[in-house]
Length: 316
Image (cartoon, rainbow, N blue to C red; front, side, top):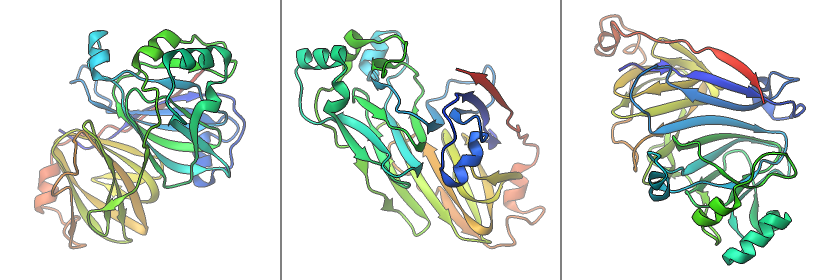
């Protein structure tokens, strides 16, 4: 397998410009990006377990819930949809909602959904850059305005929409009631340092999300033994032979590559289809090793192809 730059699907929506620091440049200025979905660029390849996205919210998104594995499989799908959010940028006062303020009966939930008061029953929490939230399947949730979020999820796009703030999209209240956990949720996660450079942001039965903070002008070996995704969230460098700058995504499944860090350092989010951090994921190399022709790492890359991504836009 190869470590490739991830292909990109971009969806645009006219939400107005957002003041979100370096991520604003990803919004194509006057036409901000609603969603960037990363993919591995393979046609006819094996099914993947995970999906990595960037979400840009110029308005509050719909209140919704996703099915768990058992429910999804009973509906003919391969998996449910649990997800995690890493906040990349946030305007002052930006919020997310994960779970309910208090337990509700199904009748209370239905009446609130039909009457539009469901938003006031959600557990809204302030969100700032660096915050991590876990949203297991069955958790009622919503994302507020003014955020850039990296979303990692099981590869299932099934959404049961409960309330859409007056937008004319279909609601799925009966299906939502059937799968929703009508109770508060413990969602906010605190990083746990594995090494100085490597932090576990969260783990669940379906995936692990980590952050790598690599110092300037260093060289590292990234070793991958199962489906993995990388997203550059700060700095610049190279991964293998590919330039890596903010917003770039990469896919790998069984491979290794040298990460050459630029003069300002680099910060990467690493998503892996594993329930715990991988031993041996990262090790530092002498600065000259990763670039020496004929070195073990360089020989391992010979004959491997890379696929540059292409971005296409579609209007919602």
